[in-house]
Length: 267
Image (cartoon, rainbow, N blue to C red; front, side):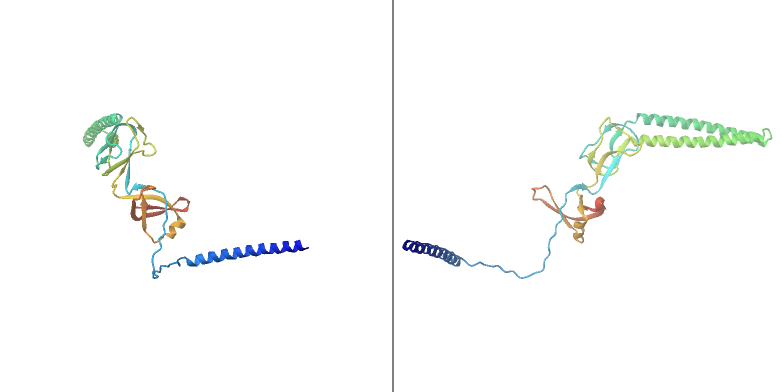
C-alpha cells in the first residue's frame, strides 16, 4: 500500500514538471517576440488616378495599303523583272507574259480590218453608181435599195472589225504587267514558265506595299473584352516574346468579324 502511494506521488511530480517546462517555453517565446523591432508603416496622401486595363491579343503586322497585281489575260510567264523586296515605280514593267499568240491575234484583226475596209469602199462606189443611174431612170429602184443595204452592211462590218482589232491590241498590251503604284514588292506568287489562267478569277502575281513606314496590326479581340476597352484608343505592341522593344500607337479601324468578334487594326 505504501509502494502504491509512492508511485502515484512520483507520477504527479512528472506531470507538474512537464507543465512547468511548457509554460516556461511559452514565456521565452513571448519575451523574445517583444524584444524585436516594431513594424514600420509608410503613408501616402489619397489621390485620384487612372487604372490601366490591358487587352492582349496576337496579330499580324501588315502594311496599311497593299495592292494586288494580277493579269487580265491567260498565258505563260516569260520574264520576271522584279522580286521580293524590290522597289518599283508606277508604270514600271515588272513581268511579261508570252505575247506570241496575242501578236498573231492582233495581226489577224488588222487583216480583217483591211478586208472589211475594202468591202466597204466597193459598196460605197456601187451605191454612188446606182444613185446616178437611178436618177437617169436606167436602173430599177430595187437595185438602188440593194446597193444601199450592201453599203450599210459593209460599214457595220468595218466597225466590227475595228472593235475586234482594239480588243486584240488591248490583250497584247495586257501581256506587259506594269506596277500600278510606287512601292515595295512584299510577295511574288509566280515563276518563269508558270501558266496563269484569268478565265474565272484574276490571279495574283505580286503584292505591292505602298508605304512600309505606315504599318497596322490585324488581330481578333473578343467583343466583351473590346467593349471594356471602348473609349480607350491607346495600344502598343511588343516585338518578340523576350524583347524589350515596345511600340505605341493608336486604334485606326475596327469591324465586326466572324464568331461575334471584333477585328481591330492598330498602327
